[in-house]
Length: 382
Image 1 (cartoon, rainbow, N blue to C red):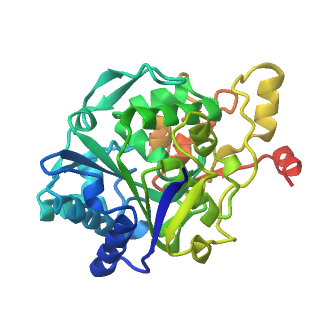
Image 2 (image 1 turned 180 degrees about the vertical axis):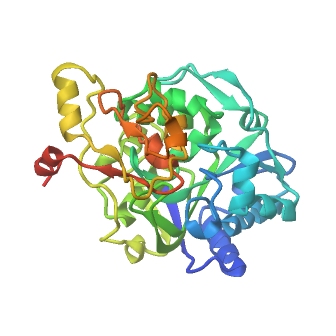
């Protein structure tokens, strides 16, 4: 049976318009009452990558958060919310993103994302256990609220990738170090979704991010709220909107392979997906080689063709965020001089150590790190 993806036009973040769009999307899927029961503890999981304002298009917009929360509260659900940012605290990111104020208005408590516990997942195809935030494990169910953005490693970050924020703090970096191959990393994300099993995904695609996402790209109006119970089908819909081949997105490929969802049997409900397609959406469209061995011939090929993070010195403020978030030891990006940040010189990459996780690019607060495709890679994929 085909997976259903509901699309509701939403041309602005005006509260009334967002509420109408969210209510319509949920109605197309059978109504909010299909997903929650009275008295259930439901965690809302927005994208709170970092502390960014709503107009930067980095995080789930607070009006989308509020609209979904109202719909679920009307069904009697007891809500909490949380995410584990890539850098900084959950509370700080939520304040800057406007989510904390939205939650306070509705009486929704911040869940515990500062610590967690190990859970066994014997059904995992690749990963058999995860260390998840207490806020996730203490809830009866999860409703995921992703933001439609580009991503250096996974091409797009949408429904599947959003659950990575259920992994506590620096443990996300550990997964990057353990899974330097993009295929295995995406397989881990799929198993993570199978483990958490969110009941519903409501994606903020009113204003997406293209280009140097997921933090430093450009806002791009799409004008839609997109909802589904199938994260693979939802992400395949985002790929279609971005005019991007789903076969280039590991979370979609392995999501189908691991039985998380489908990209090929999708029934779109509501507004036609064709009305939202952006043929010129700025996203990396070249295939990513996946050789994880950084030594020998495979490593040479990797360095010659795989996109790499590059620091633009004119924008770098030597804040050191990239050095802090690099998950490998020794660091693949480090201070170029003994004086470190005191010298105000940009850090530099050692590409022989770099696993191409793009955490440095993802978290750079100045947008000073871009992903560059080496010349040979550009020639191969022309």
